[in-house]
Image 1 (cartoon, rainbow, N blue to C red):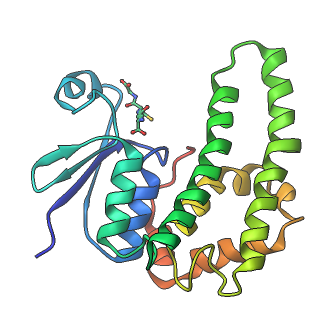
Image 2: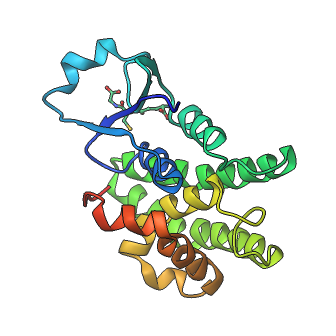
Length: 204
Ligand SMILES: N[C@@H](CCC(=O)N[C@@H](CS)C(=O)NCC(=O)O)C(=O)O
């Protein structure tokens, strides 16, 4: 019997969305608890590391988004068929994290001049480098996925990481049609498209 799952996070995609996408891809039910800013101070001390997301598995709480995502991917056969595929999945996720870490630095920068410089660098240098790496992975794998011959955590992670770029700067992705095709393939797969149709709209 499958465990009872509850994913606790704030009302946004943020660090919980990849886990939500894993549930969606696997067609596994979970409670999607979204905590408000007002509720958070009272809940914080009860969370394993005082942060969210937290996954509740049959009443036991686990923190750290990347640990949760990997657990779900292993449970739902989204972590490749061999250790080598798992390595390649981790490699792509690491690449994605390098990019999102830079976005976080940009987001937290309070000096407007530095923020603008970093923003330009992000879009003109780091994003193209990231897209080029993805393009090369997709060119080397004729199956249309980033790793192996079926959807994995890597595909879902890239789908999630590029969400804001596709929303806010879609023109910057036009130079990489393989990345666009890949995104469309993931979004139009049956379970993910069903999930996206009903997903709550949030800015981040
Ligand atoms: N390394 C942790 C970081 C979690 C984290 O930074 N959570 C933020 C939201 S994205 C949080 O809980 N902020 C509220 C707080 O720290 O009180 C993870 O990936 O799960």
